[in-house]
Length: 231
Image 1 (cartoon, helix red, strand yellow):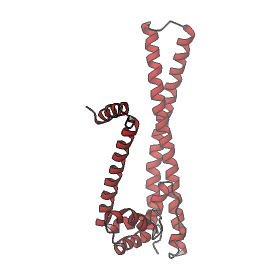
Image 2: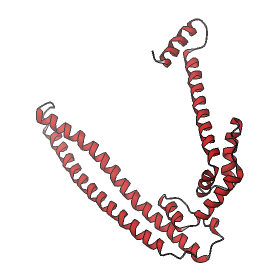
Image 3: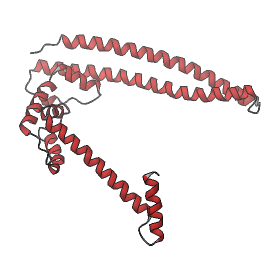
């Protein structure tokens, strides 16, 4: 028997005997399960971080977290489990990430995710590089915008597919005689179906167009970034 069902049954009879209600019994059991899952997840995460603090320090830096913020966040979580994170190794990874943050490829990647690029982190590089970092980021933002167009067209096509499926089923019911042969309703359904077919055709064309644009845009951007000065 399912454990939750057993708990409810036990809780029901307990309530008849003047004990706790089934809702309290079930709620406490589910809450305990959630706490155990959270604890297990935190221990696994802390063990992973402790085994490779350089990697997570670098990732913290690339996420634009403060030098101490990321480390203290995990230290607060991991200390109660007696899992030690080497701060020196974390800081080494963070420093590596900060250097990587000020590379054109990273600025472009952040732009492609539609995220803000913090130029203040790159105050030590030359003005020429800072200027090109802004350009690389803007190229990524442009790609992000094109990708949003593609995602919107795919989502629209998905909704049209669902609507078309329903309309085709209704049309089949009319043809089989399963629905009352209402001329106006049948005509309206066919008109909506034809309209959906046209829209689907347009969305497919848009998807093909945006896919091509994305591919060409990516190639063009990589060429531009490769030609940017590194000093």
